Length: 261
Image (cartoon, rainbow, N blue to C red; front, side, top):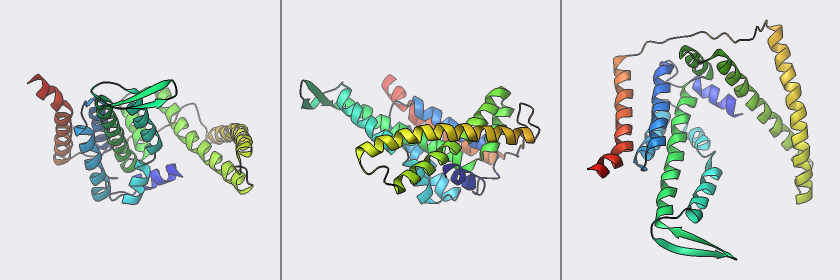
């Protein structure tokens, strides 16, 4: 499962002993700069540099990293196709006639599609850096140190745990249905999907009650206690993170600087 894969590598990579505040600042700082960038320069730089950092420096296998990076590929493809055929602007290149409707492909749509694809890859790379190098316990401890509401942190922990529990149940049910030819044709597929939804609801409810019973048996009093383990940050590490974010910021703001000039 993905939670097992993420936690396994997050707890055994070469960056495990690095301070989680530095890793959080690097990953989410890059994500913020990617989101405000109006050109593909910063997102592409983040995507390439984060891949090199995670694979070469942190020691995460390239196969694992690429398999996780390609998870949003269906969303990426659909988004690009929709942008290319719906978004206007620039010079018209061609037109596609679908009955009474006409879809135009323009230069402006191509530019927007390239920027969107670059942002998705850059943002996904920044998130994977944090996910593959920082255990979730440290992330939740970091959120607590930032003085976020305790209720928000506890709810996030429960959602994180229950999401993968529901995913595991859904995969188990679907595998059982597939072995029984539940998706052999369209009619069987519709019936299997409806049974999957109802069965997943019931199993999820039961798993939730089991989780609550386990928490109560461990004297759960309405809040999770997490140890705050601060690690020493070296000046070199801080300087490298700062320099990296400055480069990303320059690439993100370069179009504004050159445009105003």
